[in-house]
Image (cartoon, rainbow, N blue to C red; front, side, top):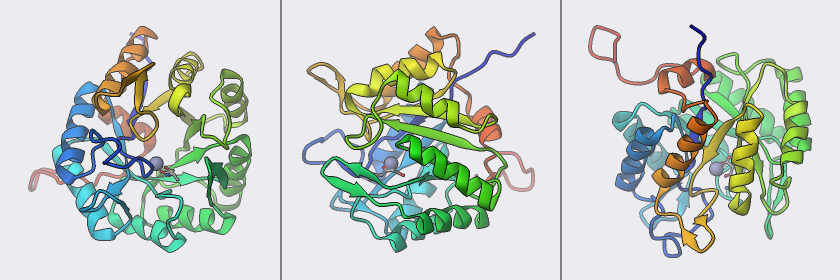
Length: 287
Ligand code: KMH
Ligand code: ZN
């Protein structure tokens, strides 16, 4: 029997841009992050992209907080835990490199500088190289974050110069609709997809109003999906997002409609080449 192609759903529940006071439903505490992770796994997510908040709900790269968040999500779910190395626009390069020591399964790796609303999200070539090599040294799977077509070219340069990532598989995420990055259009999506390595897999994320066009475009073009409150806070015109699970449920329903149902976690782990870091049942090697 032919295998049914499936859709990897990544949830990005928090981000670094929204404040808890503006968005009270944003998961910021450890308890909120864990309950969000559980609900999103149940709704069809297989990967969680984690930005961590401190006791004041401010974005932090503090290793103590980041390690605790990763361990708690890993304990409570089977999700692939992908830590953000993008952080917030004001974060230092040293801090962003430092999160690689938090023992994640995977980590985001933005492949170039981009205007980010009124700010600049700085990603110098040397930093990109250091993050990439730091991930490989620690057996962390990168997800190449591509905000523009030029970032695709930089990813190729990285792969040509330094070889394949840990796990041997290239997985990218097209981040579309950021004010300053590529627009959230099907035309831009197809231009990027045509420039990716042939063997790469990719997901797409539409920020704000780009959420739905990018989601449908990605499904039609054979891609995977990333959704979450990092990227959109509006569910439909005038309606705030209830919670992250609502966004994952919608993505899962669209994937089912496209006859590419949500990818089970074991399949996602195998596709991405993730190293097993979950605790095993003593002596059996079985989780
Ligand atoms: N918060 C943005 C400045 C990532 O997580 O790697 C960067 C970002 C990308 O969200
Ligand atoms: Zn992020």
